[in-house]
Length: 138
Image (cartoon, rainbow, N blue to C red; front, side, top):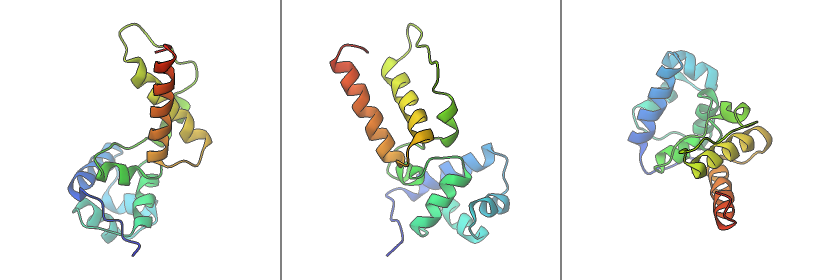
């Protein structure tokens, strides 16, 4: 109990390592910032399971919204916590996928003002897109 059994730990391992490298963090530094042991971080990058709490700590250290590791392991993508400052004054240009733009704005705004986790934020943005499409707005 307490161990998250994601469906695709290899996919998660690749995403965690890629993001860590993108941020320029050594594995030891990333583990320290997450508040976990370096061996725990290594287990994640080697596609081995760890306790669910550790995945949430990794989300935070990588700048992802809580639940992003879960989402990646389930075939989704992370929600970046830093996107919350990108939402104001968005202009959607011609030719841009308006539904995708709305999803990004909703996700960004939700991260900054709610305690929703990544799957809940994605569900909220999908519902808003559906409602806007039904009203003919996008």
